[in-house]
Image 1 (cartoon, chains in turn yellow, brown, blue):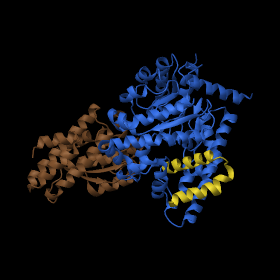
Image 2 (cartoon, one colour; image 1 turned 45 degrees about the vertical axis):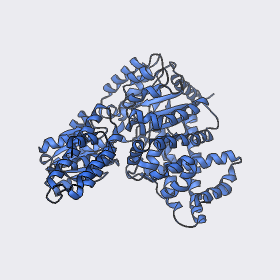
Image 3 (cartoon, helix red, strand yellow; image 1 turned 120 degrees about the horizontal axis):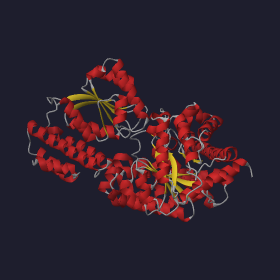
Image 4 (cartoon, one colour; image 1 turned 180 degrees about the vertical axis):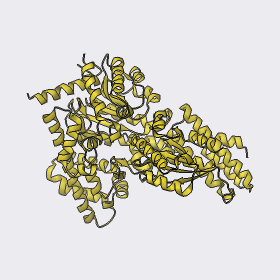
Length: 40
Length: 211
Length: 388
């Protein structure tokens, strides 16, 4: 697993899961963040 | 070396053919005089590109590709060019004006101007009036080139021309402005001598001034 | 229902009628306002980023001093604090505008197209992001994660605040902020601005156009997913915003090959779900009308910068709502009378039959994009003259 994959996994488990329920929502936030960081 | 074919191929942005022709030429161990003619043919090719751009057949992407092509062409020719004794047709101070970070157009213009024999002092981006004045004082150029893409560049250009006047330098140089927002009215308000949105045309204007 | 909510619904409807190619009760006026709001109020970008209340005051003034029916954003458009927390990013904010620092965007090698095509999001996440952002470059995974977690909290705060500000504009001012957080570039623009940079993409379009085209198509699905991840519900007051950058620089045939198919696919996917799309067609698009007239009818509001709007309406009026018309050059350097004259001509020629929205020719980003008294005079004129 790449570092980035690991970091995203940790973020998903430790942060996103605190206020998002569905996998779909978490996927959505990850996607949004990836694109935003590309645009930054 | 078929000079008119070279000019044509550069105009067509036929990179492969141009490199082939130039590499063959270099392998013949040419004289600096012969090389000078080849550089001139490349420069004519840029003029052709400029014409296509003016007609609306070429777009900025083509100008960028052409700029790169020209830089690579000069690189191939460098070993057989007489860069020590090369006289220059004139010198210019060039920069993107304060508040603006765009430089592609400036860079294209720069490589075309250098191919045409100008010595270019490129200040870079986001250059203030003070920075322009200082450089002009230092190198005494024939021409000052101001580049910008955003509307705010027009204000900066005006400031720079005013600063040149205040420093008593305005009458010693010709000022050309280039970029997206420049128009005839803007040119008059800013107090420049010429304006262009076409790098090749800009070089032609500069050549007229020194020629 | 409160006065403000009623006003809000009126304005939403006015814009909806125009976009759906009907004639509204009067010519709508769109607030294409960006950082200009800051200098109008009298604060700097730095001050705005430090104080949300101040930022809101500035944008409130800029967006309500003039009779706009809708606006692009409730605040500074980019989450710059988030960007800074990643370790800097590609923007240079020494000027009061948000410009990409030049020559810093070629971070993908031409050999990597196949990887991008195979799985765009994975490639961007695993290869590109660490090249761009300092926090992903040094330290252990735990250390990197800790920094990222900090950035995330800033990101979520930005998202929440933006939603809250849009609500305030609705309830306090009755002004629709059409921004739903979906501010996209098309795949071709993304490759240019964030992966291959100007020189790189221009070269790629000539040397490996098939790869560029394939890469653009591969990005459509993730972008559609992202769009509807953010727009859970569809409503008339929220649009997708697209900022197109690449097409103005390339030939029509090159556009057709590398950019158009993915652009068309994305817009069709969004329109199919009933969402309106606001598109900024930068520079001049006349040579591309034959393509964009195929976009879904009644779903797009197209802001044209340099085109002759009369020509644009003729060619595209059956497909999309045409917006724009007043040059920032005139708004700043011209007189009130000149601005009003231009507006009158636009209304006379473009308003009949609907499908026209008035706006400046480009986003108001800096102080010298508009003089307040000109903007006030012309917008007030339009409210009167542009009514049925």
